[in-house]
Image (cartoon, rainbow over all chains, first blue to last red; front, side):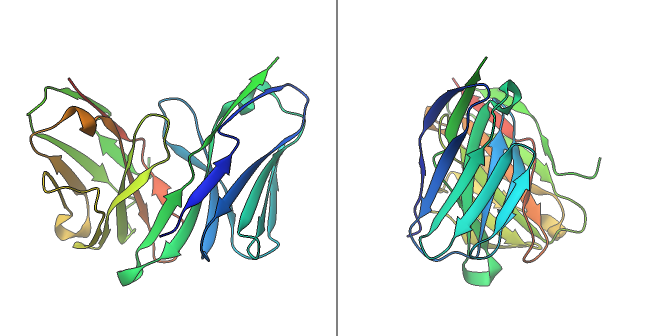
Amino acid sequence: ELKVEQNPLFLSMQEGKNYTIYCNYSTTSDRLYWYRQDPGKSLESLFVLLSNGAVKQEGRLMASLDTKARLSTLHITAAVHDLSATYFCAVVKVYNFGNEKLTFGTGTRLTIIP
Amino acid sequence: DTGVSQNPRHKITKRGQNVTFRCDPISEHNRLYWYRQTLGQGPEFLTYFQNEAQLEKSRLLSDRFSAERPKGSFSTLEIQRTEQGDSAMYLCASSLSHYEQYFGPGTRLTVT
């Protein structure tokens, strides 16, 4: 059974600092996503990573994928308050009948302190 | 608005009552998924449709849960005899084959 672990679960950081969220998964995967979720809201897709060595950047966020280590990272550069949210990684594995089921990590609740 | 829509957005019900949620996917998307998210957790897969066929169901989907997608368009998720443990956010997502899933805003269920 595919398992996805994220760490840390909670992260409180000061504005302007850098930090990294880690996502480990237990079996080979077809794709990996990073999502953002604000309290009481749905999921906003940030990045999709398709292959080993993939790196995507958008603003202060950068995601990378190492399929050999089964590890993805989400790096935050010079954090600002509006990045406060919960971040999930999700791994796609294709099952029977084309079911591209997403298995989510536990999430990292990020709080940026002024 | 051409995104995934879900109704109602919030539902409060008493234990033992039946509830039904609706999901309208993006119009050309042939695949539809339901997920459940409890407080402090990531979403968990419930069920998958390709067009009108329900092809996969999670073990989380007890016999009190039923989902349909008549004519391969909108989908409904019904929970019979609700229990307090059913309180969660129910998320619907749709996609084209081999493409990204787009999530709706969710239906938050509270069972009192």
